[in-house]
Image 1 (cartoon, rainbow, N blue to C red):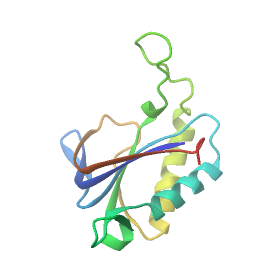
Image 2: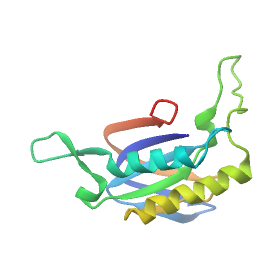
Image 3: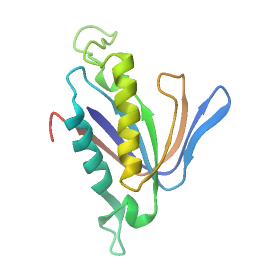
Length: 148
């Protein structure tokens, strides 16, 4: 599983001209699943996202969490996080989890984040989404369960 965390001033998801999710200060997450992922990977990433301290404290150090700053999350499904670009210029996606199972995992991951007390807005799994954000910092962190 891969989760790309971007610290944002704001973020929004629009589908067919309608806003499906938006946040102010917080995280914009791009979430992708690999064919071999299990519930253990979701738990690892949920704990990391929940505890991630990438907001500045009064001394300018990244030491505050999303809860500390009253932030929220925009969670977006993103199978292209598993693009394989080793051969040629057209990426392959054989490592990305199949649609139905990935949709279940996405819904479960969002539920896990919400159950931990975080406010989470979403896009729509598999839709053509237009994402707008103002990256804060910029701060961008890639979580990959192969490395956790």
